[in-house]
Image 1 (cartoon, helix red, strand yellow):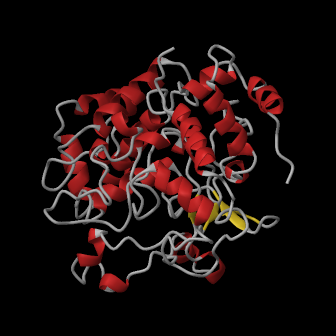
Image 2 (cartoon, rainbow, N blue to C red):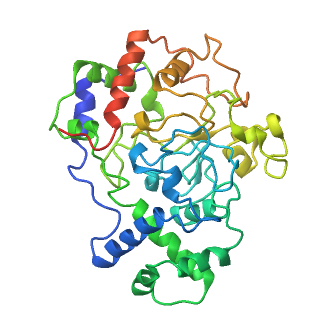
Image 3 (cartoon, rainbow, N blue to C red):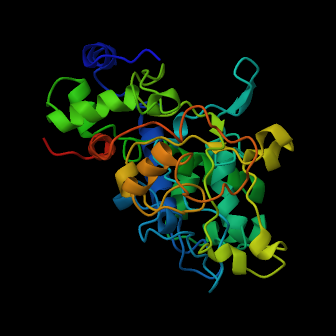
Amino acid sequence: MKYLSLLSILLLLTSCNEEYTSISNDNSTISAKEDLGKKLFFEVKLSNPEGQACASCHNPATGFSDTNHSIVSPGIVANSFGNRNAPSLAYAIFAPERYYNTVDQTYIGGMFLDGRSQNLQTQVLGPLLNPVEMNNTSHAMIANKIRNLSYFNDFISIYGSTNDDEVLLSQFADAVANFEKSRTVNSFTSKFDYYSKGTVDFTQDEKDGLNLFVGKALCANCHIVDADENTGKVLFTDFTYDNIGVPKNPLNPFYNMPAAINPDGANYVDLGIGAIVNQNTHKGKFKVPSLRNVALSAPYFHNGVFNTLEEVIHFYNKRLVENLGTPEYNTNVNIEELGDLKLTLEEERKLKVFLETLTDHYRK
Protein backbone atom coordinates (compact mmCIF):
# COMPACT_ATOMS: atom_id res chain seq x y z
CA MET A 1 0.00 0.00 0.00
CA LYS A 2 1.39 3.36 -1.03
CA TYR A 3 0.39 6.06 1.44
CA LEU A 4 0.07 9.73 0.54
CA SER A 5 2.39 12.14 2.30
CA LEU A 6 0.92 15.21 3.97
CA LEU A 7 2.54 17.34 1.25
CA SER A 8 0.79 15.27 -1.43
CA ILE A 9 -2.52 15.71 0.38
CA LEU A 10 -2.05 19.47 0.58
CA LEU A 11 -1.26 19.66 -3.13
CA LEU A 12 -4.39 17.67 -3.87
CA LEU A 13 -6.58 19.83 -1.66
CA THR A 14 -5.27 23.16 -2.92
CA SER A 15 -6.07 22.05 -6.46
CA CYS A 16 -9.74 22.23 -5.55
CA ASN A 17 -11.81 25.20 -6.65
CA GLU A 18 -11.67 28.09 -4.20
CA GLU A 19 -15.41 28.64 -4.11
CA TYR A 20 -18.37 26.30 -4.27
CA THR A 21 -20.54 26.91 -7.33
CA SER A 22 -24.20 26.21 -6.61
CA ILE A 23 -25.82 23.54 -8.75
CA SER A 24 -28.78 25.86 -9.07
CA ASN A 25 -28.64 28.83 -11.40
CA ASP A 26 -28.36 32.23 -9.76
CA ASN A 27 -31.66 33.78 -10.72
CA SER A 28 -34.77 34.89 -8.87
CA THR A 29 -36.87 31.91 -9.96
CA ILE A 30 -34.41 29.39 -8.54
CA SER A 31 -34.03 31.44 -5.35
CA ALA A 32 -37.82 31.44 -4.99
CA LYS A 33 -37.85 27.66 -5.47
CA GLU A 34 -35.22 27.22 -2.78
CA ASP A 35 -37.21 29.41 -0.40
CA LEU A 36 -40.39 27.46 -1.11
CA GLY A 37 -38.50 24.20 -0.72
CA LYS A 38 -37.17 25.32 2.64
CA LYS A 39 -40.69 26.12 3.88
CA LEU A 40 -41.88 22.70 2.73
CA PHE A 41 -38.89 20.95 4.31
CA PHE A 42 -39.85 22.38 7.73
CA GLU A 43 -43.63 22.09 7.18
CA VAL A 44 -45.39 19.98 9.83
CA LYS A 45 -48.83 20.09 8.17
CA LEU A 46 -47.99 17.55 5.48
CA SER A 47 -48.00 14.43 7.68
CA ASN A 48 -51.04 12.38 8.72
CA PRO A 49 -51.84 13.45 11.41
CA GLU A 50 -50.07 16.79 11.36
CA GLY A 51 -46.89 17.27 13.34
CA GLN A 52 -43.97 15.78 11.41
CA ALA A 53 -41.78 17.45 8.78
CA CYS A 54 -38.76 16.38 6.75
CA ALA A 55 -36.70 18.34 9.27
CA SER A 56 -38.06 16.20 12.12
CA CYS A 57 -35.62 13.47 11.06
CA HIS A 58 -33.14 15.63 9.13
CA ASN A 59 -32.31 18.63 11.28
CA PRO A 60 -29.67 21.23 10.33
CA ALA A 61 -28.35 21.17 13.91
CA THR A 62 -27.10 17.60 13.42
CA GLY A 63 -25.91 17.84 9.83
CA PHE A 64 -29.43 17.14 8.55
CA SER A 65 -29.67 13.86 10.48
CA ASP A 66 -31.92 12.99 13.43
CA THR A 67 -31.66 15.75 16.01
CA ASN A 68 -32.59 13.31 18.81
CA HIS A 69 -29.91 10.80 17.78
CA SER A 70 -32.55 8.06 17.69
CA ILE A 71 -31.64 4.55 16.55
CA VAL A 72 -34.63 4.81 14.25
CA SER A 73 -36.61 8.03 13.99
CA PRO A 74 -40.22 7.62 15.20
CA GLY A 75 -43.02 8.13 12.70
CA ILE A 76 -45.95 10.47 13.17
CA VAL A 77 -48.16 7.61 14.41
CA ALA A 78 -47.38 6.60 17.98
CA ASN A 79 -44.99 3.63 18.31
CA SER A 80 -44.25 3.46 14.59
CA PHE A 81 -40.66 2.94 13.48
CA GLY A 82 -38.92 2.19 10.22
CA ASN A 83 -36.04 -0.22 9.81
CA ARG A 84 -33.13 2.24 9.43
CA ASN A 85 -31.27 5.02 11.14
CA ALA A 86 -32.00 8.35 9.42
CA PRO A 87 -28.99 9.27 7.25
CA SER A 88 -27.77 12.82 6.80
CA LEU A 89 -29.26 14.62 3.80
CA ALA A 90 -26.34 17.04 3.56
CA TYR A 91 -24.32 16.57 0.37
CA ALA A 92 -26.68 13.81 -0.84
CA ILE A 93 -27.36 15.79 -4.00
CA PHE A 94 -23.93 14.98 -5.36
CA ALA A 95 -24.69 11.27 -5.72
CA PRO A 96 -25.17 10.33 -9.38
CA GLU A 97 -28.20 8.36 -10.49
CA ARG A 98 -27.59 4.72 -9.67
CA TYR A 99 -25.62 2.71 -12.21
CA TYR A 100 -23.50 -0.42 -12.26
CA ASN A 101 -19.73 -0.12 -12.61
CA THR A 102 -18.64 -3.26 -14.45
CA VAL A 103 -14.95 -2.68 -13.74
CA ASP A 104 -15.29 -2.51 -9.95
CA GLN A 105 -18.41 -4.71 -9.94
CA THR A 106 -20.36 -2.36 -7.72
CA TYR A 107 -23.38 -0.15 -7.94
CA ILE A 108 -22.73 3.56 -7.59
CA GLY A 109 -25.09 6.37 -6.65
CA GLY A 110 -28.80 6.64 -6.06
CA MET A 111 -30.66 8.00 -3.04
CA PHE A 112 -31.32 6.39 0.34
CA LEU A 113 -28.87 3.95 1.92
CA ASP A 114 -30.06 1.23 -0.49
CA GLY A 115 -30.15 3.40 -3.62
CA ARG A 116 -33.82 2.69 -4.25
CA SER A 117 -34.52 6.19 -5.59
CA GLN A 118 -32.61 7.53 -8.55
CA ASN A 119 -32.73 11.23 -7.69
CA LEU A 120 -33.87 13.79 -5.15
CA GLN A 121 -37.23 14.31 -6.83
CA THR A 122 -38.26 10.70 -6.36
CA GLN A 123 -36.60 10.47 -2.95
CA VAL A 124 -38.58 13.40 -1.56
CA LEU A 125 -41.98 11.73 -1.92
CA GLY A 126 -41.05 8.40 -0.31
CA PRO A 127 -41.30 9.44 3.38
CA LEU A 128 -44.60 11.24 2.79
CA LEU A 129 -46.31 7.97 1.83
CA ASN A 130 -44.45 5.66 4.21
CA PRO A 131 -46.82 4.44 6.97
CA VAL A 132 -44.01 4.46 9.55
CA GLU A 133 -42.90 7.98 8.64
CA MET A 134 -45.41 10.64 7.54
CA ASN A 135 -48.25 8.18 6.92
CA ASN A 136 -50.16 9.76 4.03
CA THR A 137 -52.33 7.23 2.23
CA SER A 138 -52.45 8.71 -1.28
CA HIS A 139 -51.09 11.35 -3.60
CA ALA A 140 -54.47 13.05 -3.45
CA MET A 141 -54.17 13.42 0.34
CA ILE A 142 -50.76 15.08 0.02
CA ALA A 143 -51.91 17.35 -2.80
CA ASN A 144 -54.90 18.50 -0.75
CA LYS A 145 -52.63 19.36 2.17
CA ILE A 146 -50.34 21.37 -0.14
CA ARG A 147 -53.29 23.35 -1.55
CA ASN A 148 -54.32 24.29 1.99
CA LEU A 149 -50.94 25.72 2.97
CA SER A 150 -50.95 29.43 3.78
CA TYR A 151 -48.20 30.00 1.20
CA PHE A 152 -49.75 27.95 -1.61
CA ASN A 153 -49.69 31.07 -3.78
CA ASP A 154 -45.91 30.59 -3.88
CA PHE A 155 -46.53 27.44 -5.93
CA ILE A 156 -48.74 29.33 -8.34
CA SER A 157 -46.33 32.24 -8.76
CA ILE A 158 -43.43 29.87 -9.48
CA TYR A 159 -45.02 26.96 -11.32
CA GLY A 160 -48.40 28.23 -12.45
CA SER A 161 -51.81 26.88 -11.50
CA THR A 162 -52.72 23.21 -11.87
CA ASN A 163 -55.59 20.94 -10.88
CA ASP A 164 -53.52 17.82 -11.54
CA ASP A 165 -52.40 16.18 -8.28
CA GLU A 166 -49.46 14.42 -9.92
CA VAL A 167 -48.20 17.66 -11.45
CA LEU A 168 -48.51 19.39 -8.08
CA LEU A 169 -46.53 16.64 -6.36
CA SER A 170 -43.85 16.95 -9.03
CA GLN A 171 -43.68 20.67 -8.28
CA PHE A 172 -43.45 19.93 -4.55
CA ALA A 173 -40.58 17.50 -5.14
CA ASP A 174 -38.80 19.99 -7.38
CA ALA A 175 -39.03 22.75 -4.78
CA VAL A 176 -37.74 20.56 -1.93
CA ALA A 177 -34.98 19.21 -4.16
CA ASN A 178 -33.89 22.77 -4.91
CA PHE A 179 -33.61 23.45 -1.18
CA GLU A 180 -31.62 20.24 -0.72
CA LYS A 181 -29.26 21.44 -3.47
CA SER A 182 -28.71 24.79 -1.78
CA ARG A 183 -25.77 26.17 0.18
CA THR A 184 -27.88 25.88 3.32
CA VAL A 185 -27.69 22.10 3.08
CA ASN A 186 -24.30 21.87 1.37
CA SER A 187 -22.25 24.71 2.78
CA PHE A 188 -18.67 23.34 2.60
CA THR A 189 -17.75 25.38 5.68
CA SER A 190 -15.84 22.85 7.78
CA LYS A 191 -12.39 23.43 9.21
CA PHE A 192 -11.17 20.95 6.58
CA ASP A 193 -12.50 23.23 3.83
CA TYR A 194 -10.70 26.25 5.23
CA TYR A 195 -7.57 24.17 5.74
CA SER A 196 -7.71 22.99 2.13
CA LYS A 197 -7.79 26.64 1.02
CA GLY A 198 -4.89 27.53 3.30
CA THR A 199 -6.85 29.96 5.47
CA VAL A 200 -6.45 27.98 8.73
CA ASP A 201 -3.95 25.43 9.95
CA PHE A 202 -4.53 22.02 11.46
CA THR A 203 -3.20 21.01 14.85
CA GLN A 204 -0.58 18.28 14.82
CA ASP A 205 -3.20 15.73 15.90
CA GLU A 206 -5.47 16.78 13.02
CA LYS A 207 -2.59 16.48 10.55
CA ASP A 208 -1.67 13.08 11.93
CA GLY A 209 -5.32 12.03 11.70
CA LEU A 210 -5.51 13.12 8.06
CA ASN A 211 -2.37 11.14 7.27
CA LEU A 212 -3.93 8.08 8.91
CA PHE A 213 -7.19 8.66 7.02
CA VAL A 214 -5.51 8.49 3.62
CA GLY A 215 -2.88 5.99 4.69
CA LYS A 216 -2.77 3.28 7.32
CA ALA A 217 -6.49 3.43 8.20
CA LEU A 218 -7.52 2.98 4.53
CA CYS A 219 -10.54 5.28 5.02
CA ALA A 220 -9.89 7.12 1.76
CA ASN A 221 -10.32 3.93 -0.24
CA CYS A 222 -14.07 4.56 -0.09
CA HIS A 223 -14.36 7.98 1.58
CA ILE A 224 -12.22 9.46 -1.15
CA VAL A 225 -10.29 12.73 -0.92
CA ASP A 226 -10.27 13.36 -4.67
CA ALA A 227 -12.01 16.61 -5.63
CA ASP A 228 -15.51 16.15 -7.05
CA GLU A 229 -15.59 17.20 -10.70
CA ASN A 230 -18.73 19.34 -10.25
CA THR A 231 -17.87 21.23 -7.08
CA GLY A 232 -14.09 21.00 -6.89
CA LYS A 233 -14.63 19.89 -3.29
CA VAL A 234 -13.93 16.71 -1.38
CA LEU A 235 -17.15 14.79 -0.69
CA PHE A 236 -15.59 11.96 1.37
CA THR A 237 -17.51 9.25 -0.48
CA ASP A 238 -17.30 7.42 -3.76
CA PHE A 239 -21.05 6.58 -3.55
CA THR A 240 -20.34 2.85 -3.89
CA TYR A 241 -21.94 0.06 -1.82
CA ASP A 242 -20.29 -2.19 0.72
CA ASN A 243 -21.03 -4.75 3.42
CA ILE A 244 -18.61 -3.94 6.23
CA GLY A 245 -19.95 -6.56 8.62
CA VAL A 246 -22.12 -4.31 10.80
CA PRO A 247 -23.79 -6.43 13.51
CA LYS A 248 -27.51 -6.44 14.19
CA ASN A 249 -28.77 -3.88 16.67
CA PRO A 250 -31.01 -5.73 19.15
CA LEU A 251 -32.36 -2.39 20.37
CA ASN A 252 -33.79 -1.48 16.95
CA PRO A 253 -37.53 -0.94 17.61
CA PHE A 254 -38.35 -2.13 14.09
CA TYR A 255 -38.06 -5.72 15.33
CA ASN A 256 -41.14 -5.11 17.49
CA MET A 257 -43.30 -3.62 14.75
CA PRO A 258 -46.50 -5.51 13.85
CA ALA A 259 -46.41 -8.21 11.20
CA ALA A 260 -48.06 -5.92 8.65
CA ILE A 261 -44.90 -3.78 8.76
CA ASN A 262 -42.28 -6.36 9.71
CA PRO A 263 -43.44 -9.93 9.07
CA ASP A 264 -40.01 -11.34 10.05
CA GLY A 265 -40.01 -9.86 13.55
CA ALA A 266 -36.68 -10.31 15.37
CA ASN A 267 -35.42 -12.43 12.46
CA TYR A 268 -35.50 -9.49 10.07
CA VAL A 269 -32.27 -8.97 8.13
CA ASP A 270 -31.69 -5.74 6.20
CA LEU A 271 -30.30 -6.69 2.78
CA GLY A 272 -29.56 -3.14 1.62
CA ILE A 273 -29.19 -2.62 -2.11
CA GLY A 274 -29.25 -6.40 -2.63
CA ALA A 275 -32.99 -6.37 -1.98
CA ILE A 276 -33.48 -3.53 -4.48
CA VAL A 277 -31.55 -5.09 -7.36
CA ASN A 278 -32.43 -8.67 -6.30
CA GLN A 279 -28.85 -9.89 -6.64
CA ASN A 280 -27.24 -12.15 -4.05
CA THR A 281 -23.76 -10.72 -4.61
CA HIS A 282 -24.96 -7.30 -3.40
CA LYS A 283 -27.03 -8.35 -0.39
CA GLY A 284 -26.01 -6.70 2.86
CA LYS A 285 -24.40 -3.76 1.08
CA PHE A 286 -25.20 -0.12 1.84
CA LYS A 287 -24.13 3.10 0.20
CA VAL A 288 -20.91 4.62 1.46
CA PRO A 289 -22.01 7.87 3.15
CA SER A 290 -20.24 11.19 3.07
CA LEU A 291 -18.28 11.72 6.28
CA ARG A 292 -19.05 15.43 6.32
CA ASN A 293 -20.70 16.29 9.66
CA VAL A 294 -20.11 12.72 10.84
CA ALA A 295 -19.31 13.93 14.36
CA LEU A 296 -22.90 15.25 14.63
CA SER A 297 -24.86 12.34 13.22
CA ALA A 298 -24.72 9.58 15.85
CA PRO A 299 -25.79 6.81 16.09
CA TYR A 300 -23.94 5.19 13.21
CA PHE A 301 -24.50 2.71 10.38
CA HIS A 302 -27.80 1.69 8.82
CA ASN A 303 -29.20 0.31 12.07
CA GLY A 304 -27.66 2.77 14.54
CA VAL A 305 -25.75 0.00 16.32
CA PHE A 306 -22.84 2.21 17.47
CA ASN A 307 -23.34 5.40 19.47
CA THR A 308 -19.92 7.06 19.20
CA LEU A 309 -17.18 7.70 16.68
CA GLU A 310 -14.78 5.94 19.02
CA GLU A 311 -16.82 2.75 18.68
CA VAL A 312 -17.01 3.10 14.90
CA ILE A 313 -13.28 3.64 14.48
CA HIS A 314 -12.47 0.73 16.80
CA PHE A 315 -14.88 -1.49 14.84
CA TYR A 316 -13.11 -0.65 11.58
CA ASN A 317 -9.78 -1.28 13.24
CA LYS A 318 -10.47 -4.50 15.17
CA ARG A 319 -13.57 -6.22 13.75
CA LEU A 320 -11.63 -9.28 12.59
CA VAL A 321 -9.52 -9.71 15.72
CA GLU A 322 -12.01 -8.85 18.49
CA ASN A 323 -15.54 -10.04 19.14
CA LEU A 324 -17.44 -6.93 18.10
CA GLY A 325 -20.60 -8.67 16.96
CA THR A 326 -21.64 -11.10 14.22
CA PRO A 327 -22.40 -9.39 10.89
CA GLU A 328 -26.12 -8.91 10.30
CA TYR A 329 -25.59 -10.41 6.84
CA ASN A 330 -22.55 -12.66 6.92
CA THR A 331 -21.94 -12.91 3.17
CA ASN A 332 -20.23 -10.39 0.88
CA VAL A 333 -18.42 -8.89 3.89
CA ASN A 334 -15.43 -6.66 3.09
CA ILE A 335 -12.42 -8.25 4.80
CA GLU A 336 -9.76 -6.48 2.75
CA GLU A 337 -10.09 -2.84 3.77
CA LEU A 338 -11.07 -3.05 7.42
CA GLY A 339 -11.09 -5.31 10.43
CA ASP A 340 -7.38 -5.63 11.23
CA LEU A 341 -5.84 -2.22 10.52
CA LYS A 342 -3.35 -2.47 13.39
CA LEU A 343 -4.04 1.07 14.55
CA THR A 344 -2.96 1.90 18.07
CA LEU A 345 -5.43 3.46 20.49
CA GLU A 346 -3.56 6.74 20.05
CA GLU A 347 -3.97 6.49 16.28
CA GLU A 348 -7.68 5.76 16.73
CA ARG A 349 -7.93 8.95 18.81
CA LYS A 350 -6.12 11.05 16.19
CA LEU A 351 -8.36 9.70 13.46
CA LYS A 352 -11.39 10.86 15.45
CA VAL A 353 -9.80 14.29 15.89
CA PHE A 354 -9.48 14.58 12.11
CA LEU A 355 -13.07 13.47 11.51
CA GLU A 356 -14.22 16.27 13.80
CA THR A 357 -12.73 18.78 11.34
CA LEU A 358 -15.43 17.78 8.83
CA THR A 359 -18.22 19.54 10.76
CA ASP A 360 -19.75 22.50 8.91
CA HIS A 361 -19.94 26.10 10.17
CA TYR A 362 -16.47 26.16 11.65
CA ARG A 363 -15.64 29.55 13.14
CA LYS A 364 -12.15 30.69 12.20
